[in-house]
Image 1: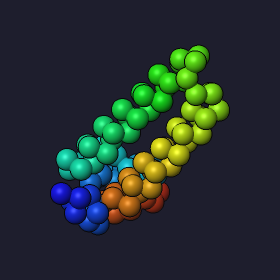
Image 2: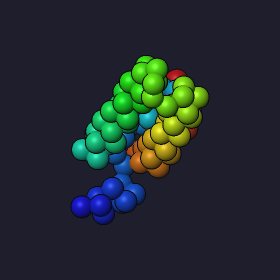
Image 3: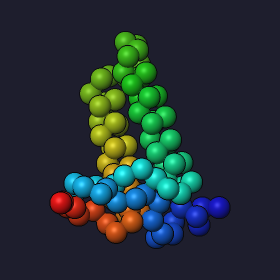
Image 4: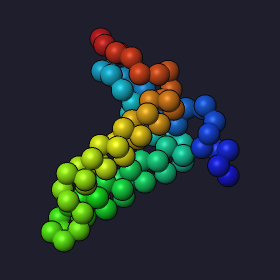
Length: 86
């Protein structure tokens, strides 16, 4: 099962214009996107709670999760990330 996540096949379409990735077109891409949204929602709820971990720790964790998500998306984008203009 984990072999499906460690392959090099693309999960995200390249943007038609601009730089970066578009929406996922494989279930692995949707799973990664869903996990990212859940992780950010959970961290936001932690930041909202005054008695939980300090805000700067929550922000640091959000930056780490976003960095990992960006690396995964970049490695699994069809055609790679490059500027696509008119």
